[in-house]
Image 1 (cartoon, rainbow, N blue to C red):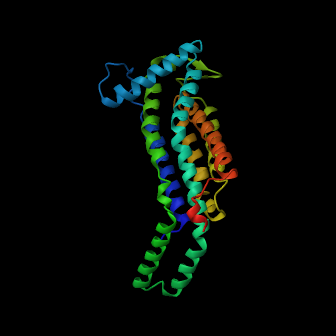
Image 2: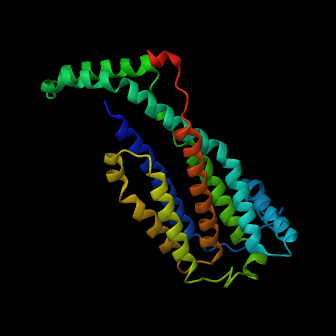
Image 3: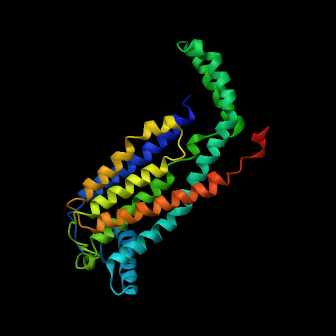
Length: 271
């Protein structure tokens, strides 16, 4: 029976792989620059990409035609819409950790009971049954943490990316020191730094063993982000940078709400 650390690690790695796949796929999707409109064919184009494009244009009109500010504003709006899902995921993680702390002594007894019978299939089956029964008794389910927020985020990330790519007004504007429609040598470095910070912040509450298992990913994601951004239009690392900053702030807020104040555990588990 997998332990808590391995299950949480699996879920986190699955989420990271989904994001990495999205980064690689999006960075390679440079071919279609056809302007999006309400007449563009396709369900995804009509109901996801086009509304995002219109929202970006509307936001730009509110800020003197600044499409850089529009990307920032819409990115924050999208993240705010996703925030309840992400906060629920973080809360579930804390609940599962508290439940695991309660049942850990009983789990150790079960493991101790069968530690000399690791090569006996029947003993291993009985150990798994006892562990599963213990989980069910205390309502412990690490898989309840889930990858749903990432799965919800992925089509939105695709839609927003394609909306930016297929809104021609964006490429014709500049923001701060760079042209939104041209590659910039500095923005990829900023995006990579932000995602490195995000990875480190997400690992603050991890047990030491889990931090070691996830250490490589603290470097993989920033490197992939930076590599995908070089040669791409500057709006892409700008979007990723703002999204990464939001996630850092969201993670810190979640820690304040659920870690320091504590997440309530059902009274039945306190016995």
